[in-house]
Image (cartoon, rainbow, N blue to C red; front, side, top):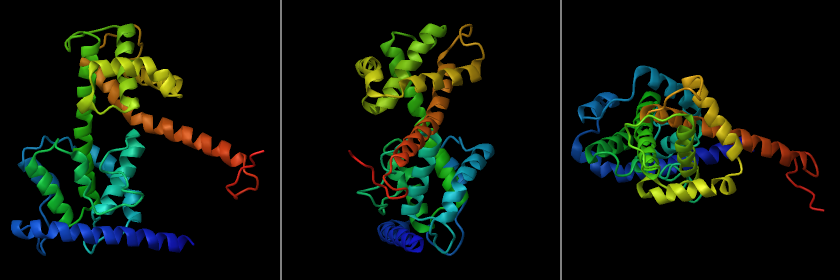
Length: 295
């Protein structure tokens, strides 16, 4: 049974990869990127396009470590690289694990991992040349573990910009200037409004100060784990600043705290899921059956 499931998974990814290569092939043949030679280093090509490099060696190593087990388990092309469906799946797992992110463009399409490139998740937030480079690289060669980590670092850096944009909108709602420094009570008010707007899921592109206000007022009703979320936020603040009540908080410090909160939120929700699973399995009518007595 396990072999059958694995074979089905390989078939799904292989079919998706074939469809993506067919679509990418026409574009790649006109650019001269396809060929027997190994492609240039992806990070080098991104930097030549003017991408500000966030992919330090330490960060890339950290991402490679997080991706390695998933990467090794997925089907690969003759180059030993992942094609589009597998790359999407690996990035989906990575960002969900690290940040609790469910990113549009990386999720399944109707329950399957189709041939769409994971680059679609970057939307219009990357220059066309960079988007074309990434899509052609994926379509022509696939992505090795290191190249997948480079793409993950590029995407992660882009998504981190959302933290700054969302925080600026919260500042507008609080009538604060970005250069102001605040003390604990006001800092917590700012961060809690950010957390409410972040967790309730309004996209930053359409977020308004009014949305922030409504999300804050409704947060306790809409998010049952708000007590745990607040404890997590306070713990992270203590880790970064020490004594929270005596510190002064500027925009950069709040952004640092909230970025770390986003990274830890996934672990909080994963723990909650495991607790729920344990409760549900304890109610099984017969161990391993998956059925629960209703009356």
